[in-house]
Amino acid sequence: MRKIFISSDHAGFRLKETIKVFLRNKKVKVEDLGPKNDSSVDYPDYAHKVAKRVKLNKTNVGILVCGSGTGMNIAANKHKNIRAAQCFNLKSTKLSRLHNDANIITLGSRLITKKNALKFVSVFLNTKFDGGRHLKRVKKI
Image (spheres, rainbow, N blue to C red):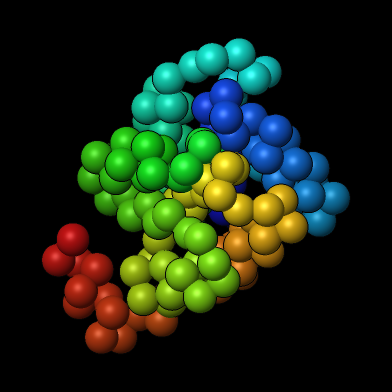
């Protein structure tokens, strides 16, 4: 069974907590890798925690939230076999899975609404990789 790992920095803490409740209400198991509150932290530390756990098993996926989504995205993508996608609308979210087989979604809590964030998470978790011509391209990453 796939595991979902979630983390944030201080700017994304409240949205991370909202996403956790949303997923747990849907009976989805999610493991929170911190932080435990909204005190200032360094986003790369938490991006690395999630990336390390996601790459242990190719069925694992991650959710990272910071102010813009960019910092978490950059840090997570430093890891081999991680394909983190910064998602800002439904189309970018869906295509990140369909065409790029993204295994981590990064969200910007200061740039998107809670309502949209929850939609993006649902689309991300429920969209399967198309494979085919896209697999050849993903293997080149």
